Length: 195
Ligand code: DLZ
Image (cartoon, rainbow, N blue to C red):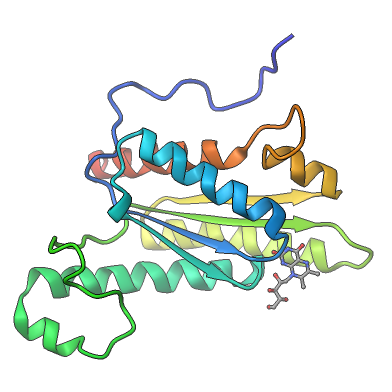
């Protein structure tokens, strides 16, 4: 019997053509992080998000994700006001670490959604519990405080096998990155409508 789990079908009217989406991923447990990030990107592209509107950044581990989401969103807002207010703002940003504003020649908007991707695997100590709790609570708080969707792409697994299955790496598994990419497009599009 097929599983009853999963997000169901996305409404066909939802398209990602105009959306700008960020992915921040941890590098811990890279054997599963790579496929998860690829899955999220693949699904967003299939839903119409333009490759140049997907920004991918990495951090060491999942604990760094909340900070990174906050700063990445702030950077996209600065970039947006700079690209829409002309040369003076461009001068202001000269030497900044932001990506070159002239790269695509287009106006950069703030992110419509950010996906935070990490994989925590339980070890012998309490590390897992502390990081899971603080990261999940912080990411929820950040999305409510910023008012943009933050997709919770953090696996909390009790074994390597669980993690590999949820990244679609082992047989019979499912790549949850696909669902996270879809959630980012749906929530990015809906949060614009609900603005
Ligand atoms: C330290 C640590 C441990 C033990 N396990 C994981 C893990 O399973 N997944 C993960 O994403 N990160 C882990 N980390 C690293 C922390 O998230 C963090 O990068 C460090 O504590 C530095 O702040």
